[in-house]
Every structure is written in C-alpha cells, then in structure tokens.
Amino acid sequence: MKIRNGFVSNSSSSSFIIAIAEITDLPTFLESMKDVKFDYHYNYGTFEELLEKGMGVNGEENELCVESFTSATTTMVMEPGKKYFVVDYAGNEGDESFMDSDDDIDYDIDSSFFDGNKTLKRILQVLFEPKKHGLGKTGYEYGAGSNG
Image (cartoon, rainbow, N blue to C red; front, side):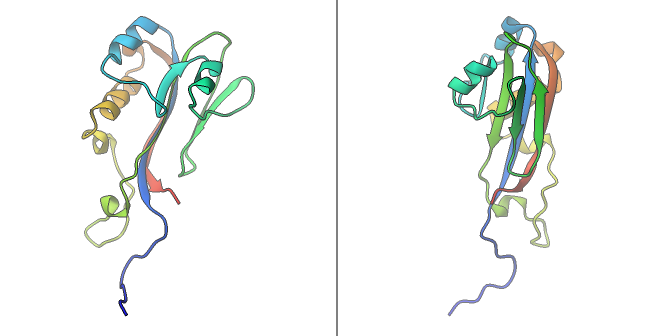
C-alpha cells in the first residue's frame, strides 16, 4: 500500500482572467486585437451577440456579469446597441504550477504569469490601457485559485 505524505486534493488549481469592457472605437479595438482569434474565452458584441456566441455571460436585462471559479466577479450595466469586449478565461495548470518552495499552494500571481501565452498577454495589455485600444468603461480581474 502506498501512503502519500503532504498535500492531497481532489481539486485543481488554475489561473483566470475575467473582464468586461465597453468598446468605444471598434476599428481601433480590432486593430489592437488583430492577432487574436476570438473564441468562447474572449469575444465582443452586443449582449445578444455575446449570448449567441456562447460566452456564458449572465445577468439582468441591462447588466453583463462574468464570474470566475474563485468568486471573483465583474459586472457592468450595459447600454442598448453598444458593443462590449468580454473575457471569461480559465486555465488548467494544476496544483503544481502554484506550489512554493515549502510545497504550499500560493495563488499570489501577477500579470507576468500570462506572458507565456501571446494571446492572454495581449488581452491584458489592451485591458491595462483601455483608451489607447478603443475601450471605455472597463472592469477586470485576474489571478489564480482552486477550481473545484
């Protein structure tokens, strides 16, 4: 019989980025995102278009809401006819990616954690400087946590 000493978990650890941003200048935004292939993790459109694209956004009639598995939430009251950029990304790195030197899980990450993924790095750059990239009101969170 094998006995494991140390951390044992049925859950796994993952990174996340959630965001909602109002697009104020669509051509500038699209130019900033020209190398990003939009998919079910990040896309743009009106509330109805985002629902059709399977973004999984939720909320009241006039509110967009995106939540991560760590209970981080971002919401925004939307205006009819406006387009929004929504990000609902969750990684799947596993606990080992967040172990510190004492084999404890440490979820304290900064944006450089995403530098290895060109798309996620670009998305954060756009969110960090919204006006430069054609965005208005912006709400975002990123980090890591247990996803189960």
